[in-house]
Image (tube, rainbow, N blue to C red; front, side, top):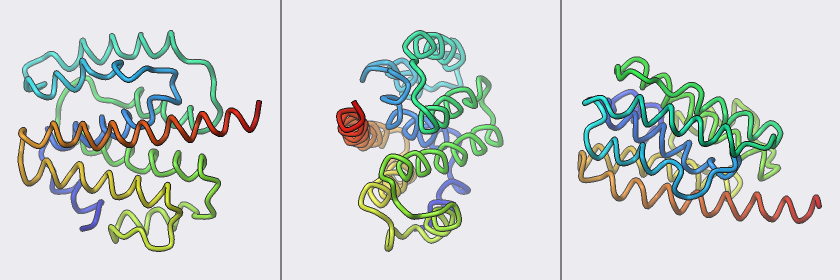
Length: 186
């Protein structure tokens, strides 16, 4: 299914999970460990609309600010995802954030993969929901984004655990890519 359509049809929780999952997969670029976003995931499980989201988001930003160490364009895109996270829940703000995180995560994967896909190719892939012609790293990221939204759409809050598992797998892949690039550069 079209990633753009899935984002357009998602409810507030689905949008928050989509944005957070994209950020979670890219957190190695910000110097964060595997647990840094856990309070935000917990907030979503507990119903973030109740008010825990904003203070947890601020603490997470502070933690990642302390861990940040530069990192070039890919890290800057990940930083913008975190900075753009809305403190107050509204469908419009969360939809804008989820859409921006989706596009940024794909650009990050394109940068790290050194793939030839340009912005128009990525936009086409997001609209079509198909990964043909994309590099393996990009195609996997597109599939993960679709899987997260489909899990939430099909299972509601019960899909959160599956979404976290998809995100964790993607974070491990990205961490390995970043490590490999660092070894080659260093």
